Image 1 (tube, helix red, strand yellow):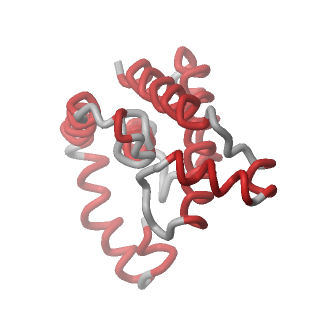
Image 2 (cartoon, one colour; image 1 turned 135 degrees about the vertical axis):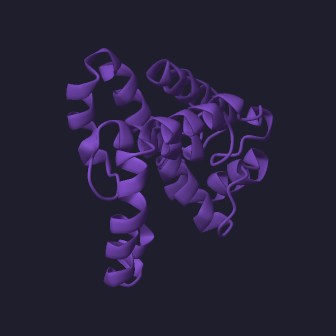
Length: 168
């Protein structure tokens, strides 16, 4: 996906022609099965509050979107604007996909806030962030507070539940 945006267009086209088409046309069910196995076997990292690696975190959501993109035979890199097409293909998952979309947006927002405070680090250390939020009024206004750790645990758990619901 990054090749299309950051790399050589010729390399991206070659990748799509030679690799992606094989995955989508010949090996789609095996590929989807492998991703679903990875999702179901992810370790319990929730106690570390890792926004990327915890069950229901950004990596799990990325894998969900990848599976759904292959399942729905959607072209190109996935983006959240494709979710309505997925809802049409999986109407029973409408609410789960909506919650997963909201979870991804919120987790990315929080991760980006933390990156402002501690560059390129996905692990959350709530105590230091709360103190920083007390010192910087703009951070208080955008939602960093004493209950943030509990809210993040709930968000990750809800996200993991919705991913499991969609992938069953």
